[in-house]
Length: 504
Image 1 (cartoon, one colour):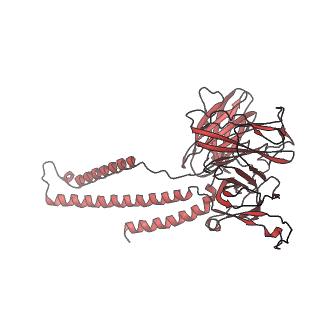
Image 2 (cartoon, rainbow, N blue to C red):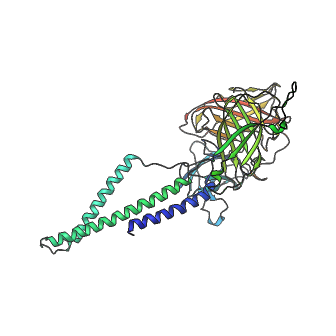
Image 3 (cartoon, helix red, strand yellow):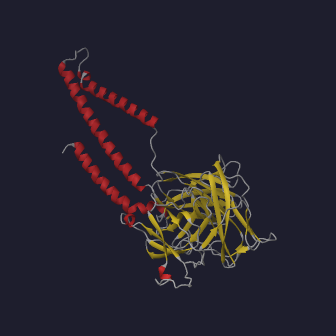
């Protein structure tokens, strides 16, 4: 077996091992909790200091993620941050990096942290000030979102430089084996020229083997990296009539039966069979948050919480929705803490408008158009988007601040809705941007300690930290609970091109 064949054989074996390993670990590298919006947002406290943390995700790994910290409080003097691999020993974590204060804004700090490998991190933000030290931990998962392609001009320039260097190297090799062996003044004969040619050919062969081996190594690395790039789960959504509610009997003349439809979401077994499947855990007390959003106008939203039939199959009763094509988004969190959004579409046919028995008490539905602000409810109360009339630009603070008032303008209270004062759903009209927001940010609320303790009633004023990732027409649904009933309001907004500077 020659050197090239042996290298190819080794490369194939390495490729197989890389494929097996990446298949087993690929779920560890998944974090697409927000379609079209990969950045992470967190609102909370570092000790006595209220802070907001924005993590701008890099497109590739390894790379540097931009960390933006807005902190208020007593005379903040220093802000540091470090990215620690989730579950790793503190002793092996890199030392914290100092954030720099943004000129012109005394509350805004920024720095960049290296994410050297894909996986789950704890971004630990530490604040020092007059009120003492404080620390906040922000869960973050670094994933490769794509593969960068080399610029064609750069590729041509590098190829030309490589050819020039190889030619120069062979010239030096030939000279060293030929003329350099002669004494000054000695003439070059055929024996010297033949020796120089043989050495140049040998050198060219060695260089060729090195280049071929390098190319094989690069292809193996490239395929391994591409295999780790995020790919969403393949899911299937089906809608069927619930014959079990009717016992399979045929309706008698003059007898009206309940018409119920069931929606089933199944994660494709061909995908789960190729890699380690990690079961789901509750996020805000639910294993799955499913959203039906009507295409062509965004005129309907259903927020459902299907029940698990198996670890990869979920069912929920479907409320009355206008016929048409729907986007289906399903937020899920796996037991190792990473979150993803499952995406599918489905067509709904005509359905009799009848009473709906929800599968979960927190299920909610909204059918209608969005408004600018305020949104008026039947009892005369209003939900106002306090920042609706501001200019909205991609990348800038979305200003999602809302206040619930009665008919006289007094601020009303709300009840906890899945552990939060409110939830928000944001969708761009083409379905390419979707996010499920909470007042604490985009991080999932898993485990008893993840959600702050909620009182029986809270002031009906809340804010969702987020930034529109791109320009376009969006609809924002805000959902909250009052008097034991989930209420929904819809707002429309046009978002302009990327903001040139600032985050607020």
